[in-house]
Image (cartoon, rainbow, N blue to C red; front, side):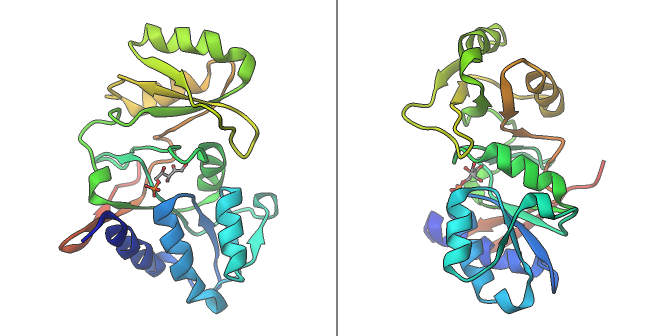
Length: 222
Ligand code: 5RP
């Protein structure tokens, strides 16, 4: 099976986690695009979606699925999103598609985070994928120095702005052995809007696409 077929498999499987009458939290990326397409097949059974990006909102609306403002919602039963890396504890790196800030906001509203990914995303230790960090422009030089002090190499993602109009620094050469501690540390540096470590908002469940079918990983609540 191709990587895209594995993504389609888990996009479809995630429908099992969507309760009747729900407002569904929807992430961003090529795997989530498959989930959105699958969701369209059951759209009469849901109230609508809260989306984590302009791209996902456009795709949801194109399918006739109502998109609600996050501000209008107090709680979501489920948030479905992809990941750039996920480890054996459900900790993730996200933001390869530049939607990390809104993704963390929508994840924070959700009772359950269902991560959907092809099997290549499962890693022993986070950090081979460059860690995205959405930042305030005037802080860039200082943040590059702070990451260098941790042994990382930060580069500005070229010619792009997030949906919030901000740049992204991609951090290479980090081995993230304590995701909770690193997320807490980097999050409080002045000028960091969002770091793409999802540790406090880790996955509750991961559906991994494999050639043998969907492999489900459950992560105990802390
Ligand atoms: C976007 C993300 C995506 O979930 C992540 O990049 C995975 O994308 P894909 O499903 O295309 O592999 O965090 O900001």
